[in-house]
Length: 96
Image (cartoon, rainbow, N blue to C red; front, side):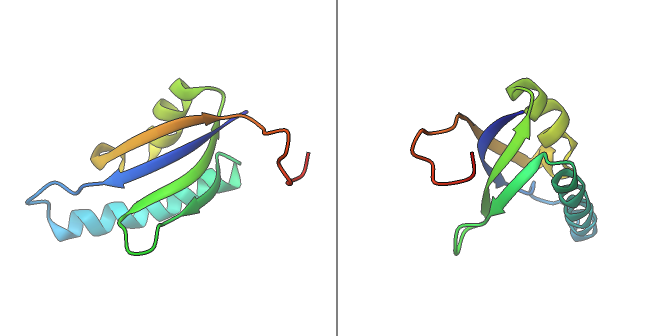
């Protein structure tokens, strides 16, 4: 599977009911756990003081990542994502 660095910003549409936001956020947490369990979501961070996330995600290719992985997130309709394909660096100190 290919790895991708994904920067996600979520913008809740003005006028959205708080109940809808809460429902989607709860469903988002469940879906993130499911994606992590299947190896699709490898790591996820939130920069200090910001309302965006940065993560390492896995999929066969970018089309699959957007359609089947990120596209399965309940908040996806409210998200924008910057996707950067990654490849191993020869000096990576992590496991081979």
